[in-house]
Length: 178
Image (cartoon, rainbow, N blue to C red):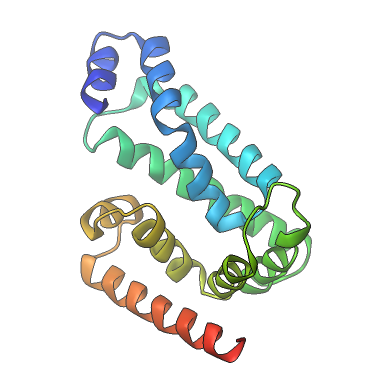
């Protein structure tokens, strides 16, 4: 799919490329965002903002990385900016903001998880921002460390350490809250 998108971009067929991007990446982006902000409406808004940015900047894509890496980097930046803005508005640290949002998860009409999933989401919410993101990309999105490295601009070694620490903290949280 990325090759087809790249071909459209090289032929300056931006609308066709954008349509393929939306069909290929909408769900992936939504769930990447949702795992960071937890609430459907917030994830939906951020996903729309991501696609607006992708559309606005599609003509400037330089093909120096995979299109998916470029899109996920935009997604990461939009999500982090959203979280920082809302945390600041509520006068909370990033960790406290994420933790408070996760606790409201059961009230989200779109949340369909069971009690075990709810506990896991709360454990993930307690992670520092980078560990939470690395965990989500590795565990849920099943991205390779090299892909995550390209998206986040962090070394593979640092990502492996972040993931290891995240798993340990999640395990500790679940054992304490069982």
